[in-house]
Amino acid sequence: MMEPRVLRHGLTFETAALTHPGRVRHHNEDSIFADDERGIWLVADGMGGHRDGNVASAMIAKAAQDMRRTGSLMELTEAFRDGIDAVNADLLARSGGQAHRIVGSTVAALLIQDANYCCLWAGDSRCYLVRDGRMEQLSHDHTEVQELLDRGVLTPEEAASWPRRNVITRAVGAIDDFRLEHAAGVVRSGDRFVLCSDGLTGHVNDDEILARSSGLSASRASHELLELALARGGKDNISVVVVNVVAREATTVVMR
Image 1 (spheres, rainbow, N blue to C red):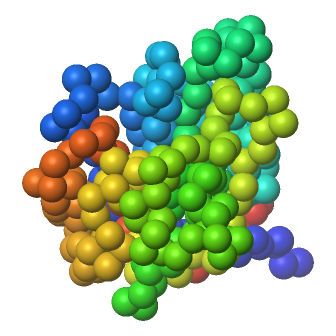
Image 2 (tube, one colour):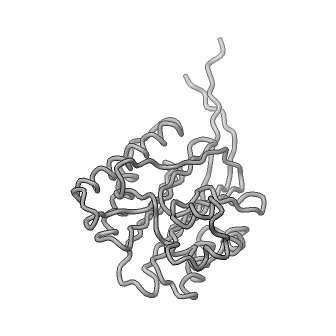
């Protein structure tokens, strides 16, 4: 009698995670988290215009750290959503419904289980996928200027200097009717994911992120991106997480 077998895909990751206060701000309101073993990575950017933004972003990282182990990407995604929903409720309770007391944070997270990924986000922290020499922005900014771009009200050139381009329309802790947006797909060997706060993208464009994410180790890529943003002024806190998928090998596990 044949024993039942389940086919799994083994993934190996090379990860680097950096955060820096930048050249202008005295405090770092960003938080990062990386766990290769469980397949969880994130960047959270405390909202600079609000008090205790570092508290909000740290609560998001702590929620990821405290997540229970799961057996599938769907379960992992639901556990992450539950954790962020709890943080959102906690932050809203702290503000007591008063706008001037709002404490919020963006988040961009990458979850990988077996051969699949899910990117979840709120705000303007981003998740990119670099594959076959091309880069795709998996996330879609929740900002006032992005909404105007989507509606065709602004051109990309006009958006670059729009006075309210940093106004965020969705963030953890800022709204009652909160939900994370997501994008999902299949992981391939050689894939590279880049998560970052707007402290990076405010100084470094997509072509430059692609150039420094292709063919470099995760550590070198993250350091080069950080140094480039700092060299151009580092006006905001800067966070970057690079996840290289080194291998995806099919293995057969025999269940006795």
